[in-house]
Length: 103
Image 1: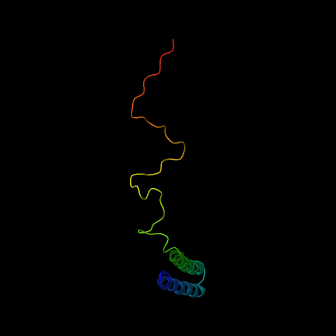
Image 2: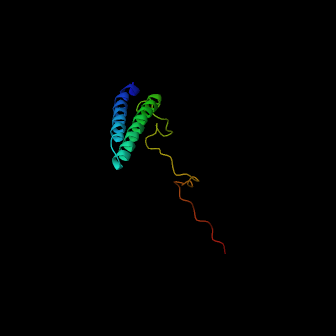
């Protein structure tokens, strides 16, 4: 459905691109170059709108609030992954006795 809604701005951008190219053909100098660039830019934006709509339609069911992407900590709100590298040393709740002094 989203790709059908994207046809409206893509059509408007395409018409604007043709209008810019038509008017640039009737002008001279710097305005002609600017009109050609503006027309091609409008065509590029129209193509990006269509590609974005197709991408969004293809990935419609893969992301969202209900299913969401799989996060390993999604079921534990306080658990977050730590920084990469070696895990920190385990801390004991019971204090350790000092090692004997060597004489």
